[in-house]
Picture 1 (tube, rainbow over the protein chains, first blue to last red):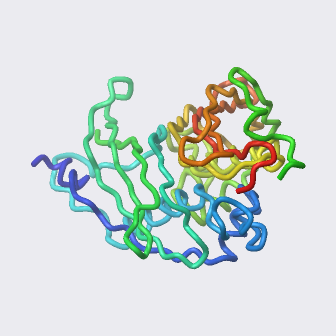
Picture 2: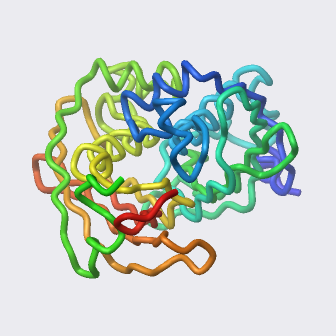
Picture 3: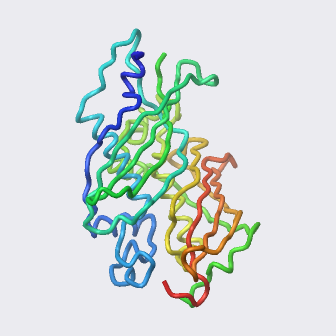
Length: 157
Length: 153
């Protein structure tokens, strides 16, 4: 296994942490960014397909990022045993195939994971690589509530 | 629900909807990043300038949230929306920097009735946000679920 594969933990599912989505925090996020009734009003949510107050999908996704970074901070930098400087994470060009499988209802505790799939050199940016991740989140029953495939630029030169 | 302006049957392929404008401030970039994405280029002007993003830049997740706000204000809150099963793709094409003014539009690319739920349909829409220099900063495609006019959830 290459030093980069080890650094990125290629193929390994990493548990990032768990978060309980309280009603007030669901509503606070939604009032700012996604104020559809089922995200801001318990009573009105009963008359929608969701049937109860649930978190905006963007709230769930942004919270994945929060725990992704928190995990990096708490666990310390992954060991770097390659030559040259330690790789540095940069920005992301985006994501695809995001699925919100199930609503995250108020009070639900969600566990976030990340799995690095592969990485490749970027022809357009010498010294940078593109790392592909598949990330998931599960509710307290173990049901998948979120999945997406994202990529992130990593400076390796 | 019937009082809403936009129901499933009101969306037709090729229809273009304006998303309005959104001015992006340093304060909101930092506030969002502090909670969800506390990386230096989203928290600090100098760190942003030193990064390949070239300035204090909004978290990509913040840009998703800003787009969602624009969607809500332009049509979603006045619609029969019942949420979305997900996002086909989200492309962060260029950094969104403090002081930028975003504008955008979206195009309906497909509509189809739900096979499993009568009264419900899926509308697939492509979104694009531009900055004040008319550079595309974000592209997204997703499907939303909408009730037919008069249908109950």
